[in-house]
Length: 415
Ligand SMILES: *Cc1c(COP(=O)(O)O)cnc(C)c1O
Image (cartoon, rainbow, N blue to C red; front, side):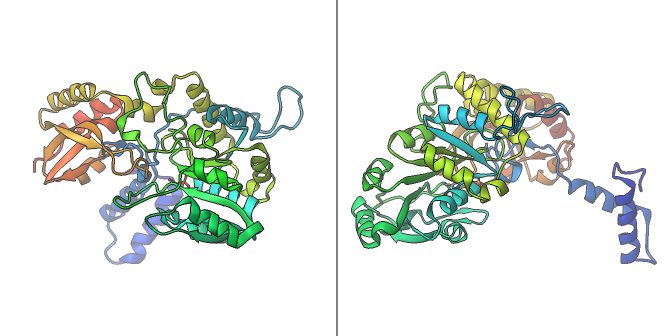
């Protein structure tokens, strides 16, 4: 059994013991090997994302190449002074430049960013939130629950479908000096249509209370200056950090691994005094990112600032590939595999970014459901099914995986 798997000896012994305990009289080598295979397949592994969901939360959202030599990193050491430095200083300054903010800092994820902002700036005080934005983003992030954990008191404003500036000003008059913040939450993963109205940040900023905008997706600039053409249509309506701050938000919070295209992280950017208050809160230590995440974010910020993001950030490479190019690649895969058809497909941004929008794409279609066999490939390929066919969407597949895709498709058992 140990010979049949690459698992450490100690794990093999554990699995053999389990097998014997389950059926002392019927222990057989094959069943034990089966356990080893299952164990191996339960481990984290690089996979080929052929789902057409660019930011697939179950597949780690934004793909990111990251190599770091086994070397120390001056995470908290200033090379200028030779003294202890701040782990937030370098990356914070870069993200401040990117967003047009006075200051910025990084935490573990965006949920942590919202929690830290509320705990630091609004504990035991009131925070106004529109009833239309008191949302669940998924995976346990619910605005009322985060609010409760932070010690801030949620004040519901307006109605589910419409909340106007006057709703906020009335709530403010009622609560008087006890209101610490207005929180605006982008309802990332759904869209209400019809008789709806929300209050833009520019209007909220006139209330005289700091406005915190949780924009979620981490689009840096609505104009996408890192792309060669105009912003893609599917981004329309997605709030961007730069424009939200320019409209008067005191702080924005967003994820590192959504439209930003980086590692899992949460960014807080805006007024220097508010960022400093967040950094000084005891929770900041518990929510801080490690050196590798900071380093990856630093490289990412530099590539946005020198406008090379479209070619150096895998997410933007996927998003910016032309349909013609995908079509050529899909035909190559079908030709090499000797099976399958090239069909038009629709990819989606995913991770709750730009909900309801689609990105034109191209897929390799195979009759029947081959998902399990594709998942068993090494590396595994994750596809989807539609109308009784298996679709492998080329937009989310890295071109270097095309040959593997073709080889696995060629070897699929007939259905
Ligand atoms: C995704 C999202 C979050 C949660 O961000 P994580 O980085 O996954 O913790 C919070 N708020 C909004 C608006 C989001 O879109």
